[in-house]
Length: 276
Image 1 (spheres, rainbow, N blue to C red):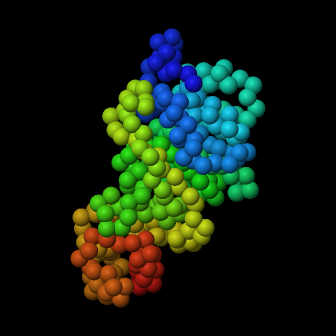
Image 2: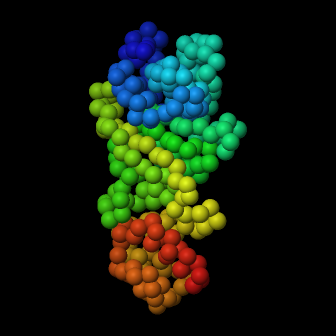
Image 3: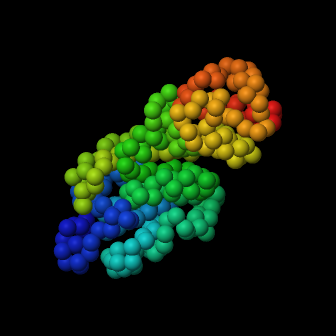
């Protein structure tokens, strides 16, 4: 395993905070991430932001095919040299938020994601992957602990919101072990934790209503302190109609969005669509 501190000294490299560059420095931590993912030999894996290749090295040694995307030009050049002539690695110099994943994987040839993800892009990249969920049956990430708590949050909790609903609609989520700040260089300002997502089959919301469902969730969580009755106000429905719809579903019009389960949100969406 390459020492980040030594690489920094010898190459003059400086971590870019804008890219969320925090490098793992303990081999035991890297092994813990690979063990937590519980992968099977021969599977194809996607790694985002391999950095100095600590996790990449472990994954290759365990017999996986790895597609690694590195945005930083200097780190990409280092990885090209370090992993020269490694046929099980496909290294790409690209932006994880801009690349077309359908060009790399397919429903017939999916990939499982394993990554120490740059925290600055964690939410938007996770949303992109879920939108392309047919390509990614399992996702295993090291994330800012605050994001993990939002992902796994149950209904009726303060962390439950649009991200919780979006992820849990399509994936089962599992909280993993905490990774101490001292496991990174530079040391981050936040706590980190592993999380695993396993694609649901079938999902809680079918594809034909997914757009309408997401529109409803965005709408009611835009101002999460509003009551359901106020969040649902629209030109097409009168206050009396909204009250009646909520009453028919046994939902309290004075409730806040975080008290409504995914299943009840689906019922609400269907009722609103029918009424309007």
